[in-house]
Length: 255
Image (cartoon, rainbow, N blue to C red; front, side, top):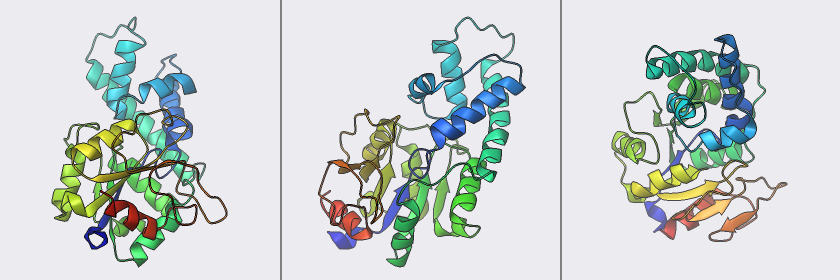
């Protein structure tokens, strides 16, 4: 029932903003160069690396699956941690430079959600510093207060597709799974949300458009704007060609 819809939980990277290709990937390459490694993650390779959630985990995966000839005397996990620390500095600088932008419809829909008295939360593998900087730079200095919970990769939780971070959000918000709706962009995110029994919609991007979104109630190109309708590949037809709170209520009622 529509009155059971109480909260929206957003993923961040690729969902709120196109941060993967032009943000995180660029920052990783800057970190590699700064630390003296001749590694370059081009757009194609980075798409493959996105199969793994979490930046540190992605570095380890790269060394195992794509650069197995790399020899290092110390701990690979510690090396990944050190690289990621440098990468985070570069990523935050990119956010501060205003070079990255929100995806279509994100700011509008969040304003509608707040006006409707619904709650919001964040569930992401990205770090707290990355997320807080993105939110304040793109949504405003007071925007952190919009979210009841900002659950990040800094928590000692299994990464998506494990459902742990969504369980954490539900517990922290004292919210039942049936009362929430997740907005994701990737197969791993959908799997995690569905495993936590939370209704899910998808706004795919260039990296995730071929993902398997089985279980998602609706799948869109982006959230859209009145002057920029979004393509929809699955789910209940939108009322006006872009995602509104009324659409979210209708979609949630179909769970």
